[in-house]
Image (spheres, rainbow, N blue to C red):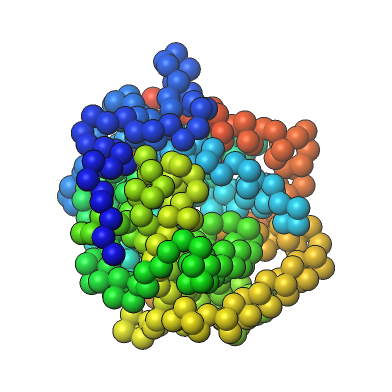
Length: 473
């Protein structure tokens, strides 16, 4: 099937000088209270980079990435950019912030803090194990894989969440100062940079720097995906089967990951020679490391969907695959424009790519039945848990899962469990459980600090890069 993409509006977004489409009317201030607010999207990225003292968010070389640490100015530039980037992705999905069953706001801020405290040690262990170049190679491994959690949302979370939101939360709770944990912050951000640079191979680290493109897959993966794509018309039985499968598996992927996007991973948009657009979507419906995922034991680790879109059918103005692995478009609803699809299965997280197999659309019903059954059981199990248990499980879903793919890739998962108490909650964070609901901290203070960007305080001028935290007074 061929479509005419000549002169398509969305292609203008990739031209130098184009400022993109505004996806929402809000603007960002952050640490730039004396300057004009910044919008979302392509224009926002450009303005943020123009305000930097360094070139840390321009295209950087392998030599730059292999340096042991960032300068203080680079740390502050990264801090400011990530604060805007976090705002840019959060405002697109702000309605997901509250769940009727799962205490997301509570577990998220506790997980952020847990990660900031604990990830630096694990990241140093992994770097010692495989070297800085080895960390970059782990990022690069995603280029030839379907169904891997070494993807942009996990890569992004290593820094934007563990450093950005974790530090922001601890500053807001007033348990650390702006000049604390500088060395550890450097460790976190260097690890993130190396993984992302290795994955992208173009000098950038974030999708927002590249007009929201995450076109990281090698041609062999695209060819494998397209070789099984079935063309169909909107409203046809195949279209209905494919979109139903996508929605049903996506719901369980969210639920298995405690109502968050770690269970979803998009790459693209890949502009095909015939004018269509390909999105490759991973839906992780069974993460065996979670104790609650036992109800998903009859399901594979991941379903990968190849979604083929007709940009002319929907009058596409812009398409973004943002840094939390999620596709957004203008106009918003791209489901009717899906004109082809294929489904692939990866049984285990370490199943070789040669054993990933196609699931024909005609054979989806037995899988859908198992997915629905697991979803119902997940609801039943969740409803019988106390708030504290739900909050602890939620912390695990972030803290464990965001770094899990890299611990697995370096062969250190078992070691950090046995020797470094990986699954234990830091005593400080455990105590914060009782603090975050006081004085509307989690309901009001945290969203204000994170959404406005005002909580991402810079490291003070003259701060020693070796500085950690030397007292709790």
